[in-house]
Length: 170
Image 1 (cartoon, rainbow, N blue to C red):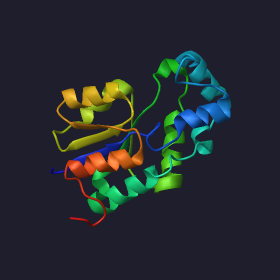
Image 2 (tube, rainbow, N blue to C red):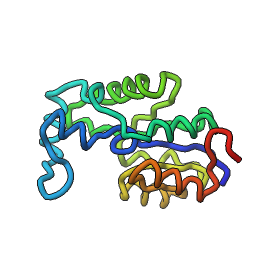
Image 3 (cartoon, one colour):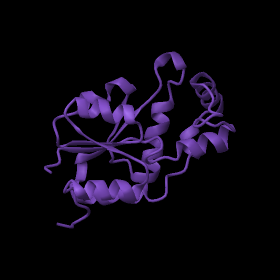
Image 4 (cartoon, helix red, strand yellow):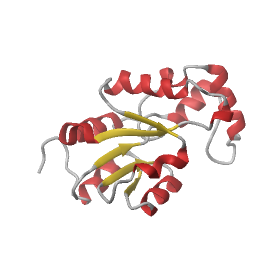
């Protein structure tokens, strides 16, 4: 596959968002005990600087870095922030700071509303690695290649099956 761009989502792809919500806010966001988005975003707003205490998913930074070594600036972050009515105006800056801390300031971070992600598709060579099946479907409907993220090893295997190589491999 000819790679145009590879986009990584952040939450539950690079950042252990679910674990951070549990650890920092004491809330569950998946399963039968999941809280509403209203409660989630209010807790994050009150806490402040949420991402500065969030940890990476083991293996995800290595996956990103390996692809970046091979494809350079064509590997970017594409991450959503809540709609403005959620009153989290600094969350995007918080995400950019997290990327700077863990991946470096030269990594491009595209901050969008969730519904805007498919506007980044430039064809089949636009790859999105995301944990949301809804985002993957919308991406593929727009003509891109979507990879549903479950863990770094599985993502790497799927990328490899698509002919996407890592840091100098042919």
